[in-house]
Image (cartoon, rainbow, N blue to C red; front, top):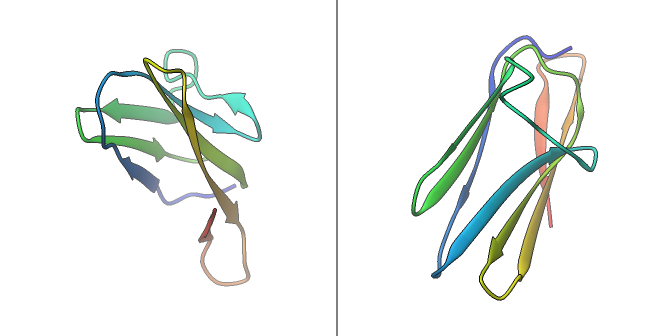
Length: 89
């Protein structure tokens, strides 16, 4: 389990953004049911904050009016020192 907060963010560009979905291992994260998760989305940025969370693969999907999706994957792994965050395309 990762003790320190992990903050992931994605910059948003373009028009007609309708939906931002953050996921862990392919399943949507819901701050309404999991108090360890905070999601903040503004016009140009969406931020995911995780507290006391397990390692895994985190991704974000952005949908606009044309139902285009942009995915970005991040793997959070435990190490002997500090947990690390590895950005994957």
